[in-house]
Image (cartoon, rainbow, N blue to C red; front, side, top):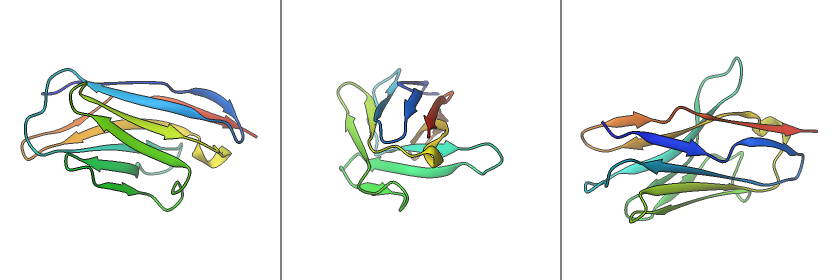
Length: 115
């Protein structure tokens, strides 16, 4: 099973920026989708952004034009650049890797946006 390690969470003021990173502990040779999800207290985990091996991206409507997902296959890394952060972006953010054979999750990193 692939292990994913997230980093980059923290506390930021309204309108600020953060960059989350997720690194896999092993190369991924198959087709895959790497995604960021988030879960706020009392809410279900929801997709924020995803990136396929072919470079296709997808974003939740609430983060379009503010968040950017990018990846580096050689570094086994996916990042999420978050700009113009809002209090409603406060949540625990999880990295997810999905291949035809596995579905792995990171431990989560907390993002808190103060108003």
